[in-house]
Length: 363
Image (cartoon, rainbow, N blue to C red; front, side, top):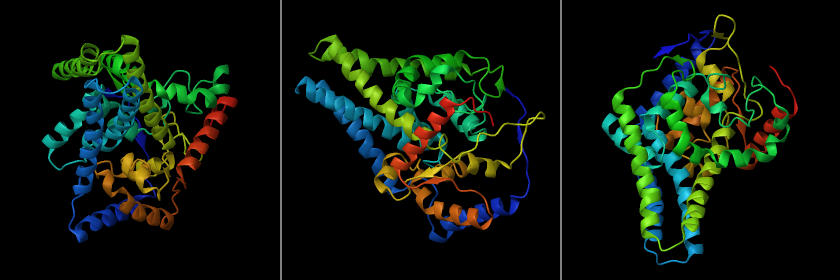
């Protein structure tokens, strides 16, 4: 892959970066703990996977009414999002285990959900995490063509209503991912800053096999086994995916598209004015630090700043190291974006959508 050259200025933040790395390293060393998954993380993974596929198995028994099966399908959607947040995400970042083979195996849970781990690592791990909130490069700003998530994006008249229809757009994201997005990306010559991409043949084969596996166990087997009309199955399948889509879409947007986060652009020479670490802090936002259940369920992604600074540290440790990051940010006079609750973050995202939709805003 050939990447367009976009660089970050390496200035006035070296002391912050070095002290931050030292303090976080000391946190793990003095306690004698690994920065990877611990027993609590493994237990959470087992719980979410058991709820997801336990619900799936219960549906296939044909023992329950259609309303109960619909409830179980929606529960699967909730677990679907939780597995994506709390299991696959860490594994694909190489944070679940110190052993690459374990991360590879656990990361296959992503493919079991209908997505493709290889393409995710390109678009998310590399592009989004390196070029966060940079219009035209960060793929997370292109969730839907009917949403304007950056002040650098072209404004359309219908964007005036995006704060009303955004949830609908988010809800379809998983269906689009399973049936369109990965195929679109694997066929594109360019992804973000990368030009003339040539994907390994093995990864193309794994994508196809993963999709076939997902379609088989999620669609073909239920249609063959369940004693219900095909349209009732479609309702359940769509309900599961819409539930997961709304949860995933909202949580990921609360991390970057809220009040206070920046959307910088490179200058004519392709240089971003901040050092990369400062860029990540100013384009990301934490929220609901005190909501322990939320942190558990979404894999610590409400500690988005910590995740972007330390993507190879397991999310189970983010609450602890966030104290270090916040204290050092204050010491070095670096902005630390934060929303105090889930509701506050959702309100901030709503207001940001409204602002981006109402004005032809250019920064």
